[in-house]
Length: 313
Image (tube, rainbow, N blue to C red; front, side):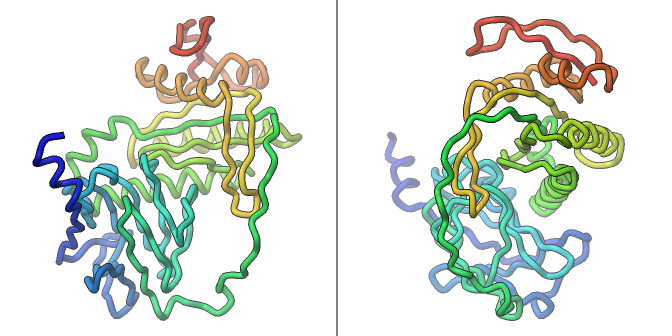
């Protein structure tokens, strides 16, 4: 490691810009209205809207450390004044009160947020409701089990050039609104968002009696979203057996196995073919003729011995 890089590692700094940022609705939010801020070593960073956090200079809150991803996480402001912390698939994770988060979590007064080894205390005195104090429920370890699942991976197209062309506030709004839209559609159809991947998500449905109908409805709603204004994105659907386990009380389940790897390979293949909606052969066979599909071909995928078929929806 050269001396300059070594110096950056030893003296990673946090840059707290002193300027205003736009909220979700495009209007400036006043500190008096929300009274929320992040604090570190006596320095305060006001939260006046959505706040993107990362190593790149385009972020609202810049953390100059090699442990921090370029676009690491977002603090999203909702219309009711609540702030939510979202990890964007960062390499080293985002931690809330010393626990790594795997889905959006609401922030409460005095919560500790840790990003790349840098700790911030979240302050929102008026947002702390007695009914929402921690219950102290003990997490129990859920045994790993193999189950058949519907898997869905969605991601924003051309995210890297997009992130370089937008201001931090606009990018934070774009990503957080898109994530929120996808999450709402999936959860209304009884699915679970398992991971947030920066510019994408991984969701699943255990193969239960309503799962096929729920997945079909999700596909149709996501296709409707694709036709509206917003970031262009693609998604692929797969069906297979996965190993699932984790801490059930916190919904921090982990999906494991070759089928999980396969759905990500299929998403990359879909991107290379410049298609917006894809479905694997097992998922198409499970659905039958319910959704019109167009055969795209058979392809060799890294890490898999035989060729895999992919269809466009």
